[in-house]
Structures are given as C-alpha cells and as structure tokens.
Length: 241
Image (cartoon, rainbow, N blue to C red; front, side):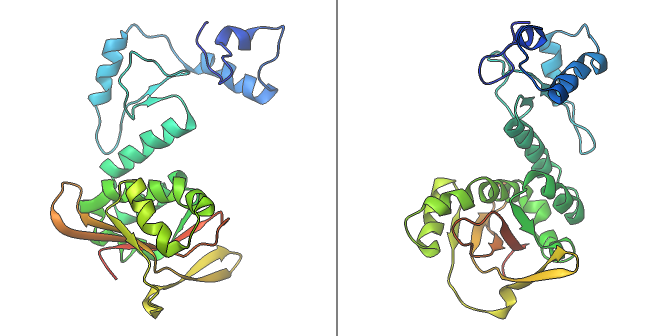
C-alpha cells in the first residue's frame, strides 16, 4: 500500500482513499482492473527475476512494476514508465528483428516521430537488417528521441549540427553533403491519396556491424528538417546509396 506510483509521491493507499480523488474516473477504473486480472503467485522475487532469461523470438519476459525497485536488476526488463516500455520493446526488436516487413511495422509503434518509407520493406533494409539490427534500433532511437528537439535549440545549420549530434549520442558519424542527386528523392504517401516529395540525403553512418566487424557499413538517410518540425522522414536504411 505504501508503493509510490505517481511522480508527486502518491501511493497506492492514496489512490484508494475516498477522501482525495487522485485519479480521473477512466484512470481509476483501469487501475482497479489490475486487481481483477492479476493473480497471486508463490514465486519469490529471485525466482521471478530468473524468468527474464527465458526468451526466444516468439516470447520474452519482463517485470512490470508500479514503481522502480532499487533491488531489482537495472535492465531493460524492468518496466515502470512509458520510456521503460519503449526501452524494453526496442531492445527485443534489435535482438529479434524478424524480416524487414515485421521490423518496419513494429518500428511504427516505437519510433512515432519518424516516418520510414515503405520501400525499405522490399529492397534496402534487408541488406543490413540481420547484421546491424541492434545498431539500427539504437540509431533510430537517437533520431526519434533527440534529433528534432536538439536541432531546434542548436545554434548553427544542419551541416554543423550532424557531427555534434553523432558525437553526443555515440554514433559513428553523420554528414550532409548537399549533392542534389535524384537517387535521394522519395515520394511518401500521406493518406487520402496525397503524397509528398522528400529529399533524403543527410545520413547517419555505421562503420561496423552488431558484433564489431570493421568495414561493415550501414546508412540511415533522412530529410533535412526545418527547425520546429514534428516529423522526420527516413528514406533509406541500407548499406550505401
């Protein structure tokens, strides 16, 4: 009952109290439904943690906690926030990427600020997916979570920003040469039959694969955004254009 579940130190006991309504009706109903769905078990915490090692490409185990526990492993498997859920799901997407179609469909859930072109399902992504899946997830995470926000507050242009961004987030490299080559053009379908022509020449660079083999190049090409944009268009995930 003393477990803290909200950022302002609200506990389970506070939520269940009839004196002060801490949650709205819908949130309260959802919270109470947990007690109907969940079942008491006799496993110790140590035994529960051991279940985290039982996984394959079709199933995985995680600890769902209402509040982060200091005595549990600090790993992607301990989920207490939306960010924790994303870390958990992205980790397993990198570890078990499936095929290009599966990978890109899952990516829509975990990289909501990115619009990745559909042609990567059939052509580009399969070149490096099985050898670079963990690195691709890490690079897409940096793009999704930080690129647009960091660029908006950056004093300078995109050419100056890209190297600084790659250093800050531990990426191999990034560049924008402005070649104006037609091979970088992509037509994105926006819905209702509308399309948008996007030039995707700026790119993040990978020099090694997931196990560190050298000269195993990968690239993620995207559009040059305007400061304040909310979506980043990713045209190609491949070896090299």
